[in-house]
Image (cartoon, rainbow, N blue to C red; front, top):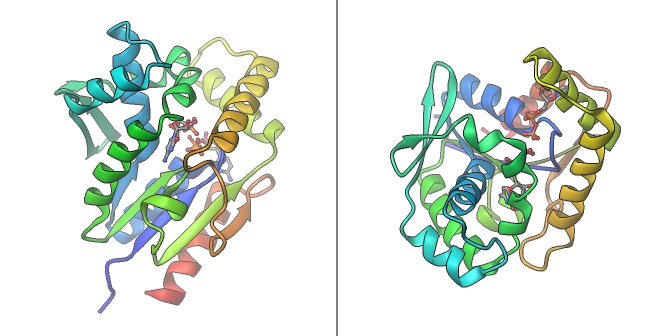
Length: 223
Ligand code: CDP
Ligand code: CDP
């Protein structure tokens, strides 16, 4: 019998975490959980409610009364904030460039981690983020850390924007990604860091299916 594994995928922005996590979850009929979407949802709500992103007490209070639901659908994972579909809104650049400031607060993280651990408690999950292998599911059966050069990651976001017909500035993307990585890696609480026992994959010159294949072979070795 194949046990219901917990697969943790961490790494910096645009390393390909959500893309490959979704495919791996699909192959195994597991639940995909995008923890970044949870931090993004709170950030979106704080921006809309004029809550100061540096005010931990206010943000924590806001989170206590905030419902965040992640629902799989044919169109991918949908994100509901207090019952409202915010799947697209939470990807706005205003949210992207603010979210790391919200994610530094220890009380905010504590509550998010509690919710994430509950979602992962029955296994059969692929969860992606920054601290999944180190803090959320430190005993995950499979841990992966995805990397890629900042140039490659900025180019990936640039290509996504261009394909959607959105304006895009490659140099600006590079700066924004580097800054977010810096804040995420240097924060005191649960910084972005490879877990000692995580399997590192540098995806700079790999395509999506090559990354998926590597993760699936790790899963098969264990499952
Ligand atoms: O998809 P992308 O890499 O652009 O970002 P994301 O996964 O949606 O995460 C957005 C931000 O949320 C990150 O830059 C972190 O500041 C924060 N985050 C976190 O602190 N811990 C997590 N487990 C997931 C996200
Ligand atoms: O979730 P994360 O921010 O780590 O990355 P993502 O949202 O999955 O974005 C990665 C982008 O790079 C997507 O447009 C993928 O199609 C592309 N890509 C990839 O994910 N993996 C590769 N090995 C090559 C390209």
